[in-house]
Amino acid sequence: MNTFHFMAICGMLSPIIYTITWIIGGFIRTDYSHIRDDVSSLFAIGAPKRWLFNSLFISGSALLFIFSFGLLWGIEGNGSVVGPILFLISTFIGLLVTLFFPLDEGGELVTLRGKLHLILIVISGIFVLVSMILLWLRTKVLAGWIGFAWFSLVSVPVMLILMALSGIFGGGPYLGLVERFMVSYFQVYYFVIALMLFLNN
View 1 (cartoon, rainbow, N blue to C red):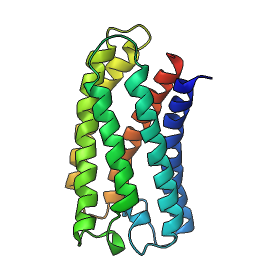
View 2 (cartoon, rainbow, N blue to C red):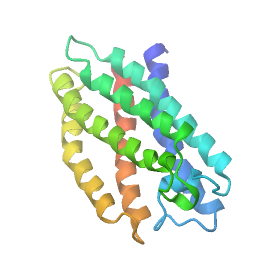
View 3 (cartoon, rainbow, N blue to C red):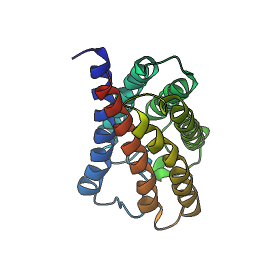
C-alpha cells in the first residue's frame, strides 16, 4: 500500500461514515425523522447526542479532506489542476462547517453562524459541481479514467436537478427525504472518485 492508496481509502471511508451517521440518527433519536429533517439537524446546537453526530461528521469531513490531497497529486498526466484544487477547497469548507458552523437550535437559521452553515454548504456544492466538469476534461483522455470522466460529466445535471429539488422542498415536510437523494449522490461520487484513485495508483 502506498500513500495514494491510504488517501483513497480515506476518501472511500468518508461517505460510508457520513451515510451510516444519518442512518443511525433515525434509530437512536425518536424525535428525528428521515422524511422531515435534514442531515445537519443531527449536529445542530442543542440537538440530542450532538457530541456523537458531530464527532462522526467531523471525522468523515476530515477523511475527505485528506483524500483531496491524493486527488490533487494522484492523477497522472499534465492536465489542469484547477479541478482537484476546487475539490480540495470544497472539502476544506465542508470540514469548517462541521467544526465551526452548526445550525442553530432546532435546525433553524437564526444567527450568523447558522446562516453561514447554509451559505458555506452552497458554496462548497458549487465548487464540487465545477470540479466535476474540470475533472471530466482532465480525465477523459487518460487510460483507466475514461469511464469515470463520463460519470463525472453526467453527474453535473443530475446534481443540479437534485439541488433544485432540495431548494423547492426546503422547509417542507419532505425536506429530509429529498435532501437525502442529493447528499447520497454526492457520497456515491466521492466513493467512486476515491476508488478510481486507488485503482490507478
